[in-house]
Image 1 (tube, rainbow, N blue to C red):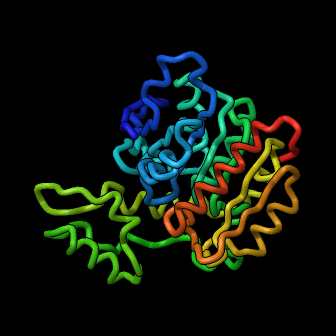
Image 2: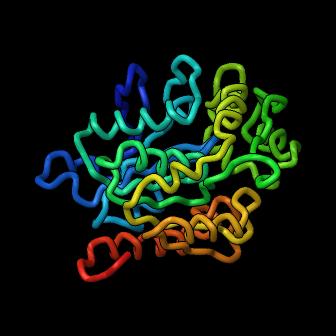
Length: 279
């Protein structure tokens, strides 16, 4: 995937393109999947999925405000800000409607985008993004990282510091690790990430039920974020939704079993092109 920069609503947002020559060909919008990462994530996390879906699909992964190499702007991390960024990004690329895939927070952004800008979304793929994000339904909706080490002498030292905070494996967070003159640190701002998580707390059922495009809901049965009972209720209440539960996977299904994740996503995308099949 090739990294690019887009000017979106006054922000410079990084994004990754799995098929950078697509703009030079006819039918460039065909088979486009917009991928949206979750909190603390990076757009390049979708590189394995993009490789698995090639050449039939072009994955464009947006690095959302305040994450990775995208600007934070004025510090507005409300869900509405993320939704409008995604909408403006798609309009700027002049693609759409597209399939929108989102993980965790990105999943909530995806289904809210479909509800508010249905002309941009032909189908949804939501990985571990819940319609209800609050206590007591979700035991730990906010990971408070404000006390984490900001700088370490080495990358290994940064890993140790994160894992000492009770994180079993810091690899997901280290996707945002960079070396600066003062040492190794993370690209995102710790306070911003807490503010963003707190803004995501709420009841999003109306948005989940607010679109009628085909949808795939991917759930890891070992997830500590999306309860299985909620995932099943989400699928049952929204017509046109397919639920795929993956055993042995937690909240980061795409990392825990990338082959199975790519398979269920690929099958769903294939079904969208089958005219006689009800998805």
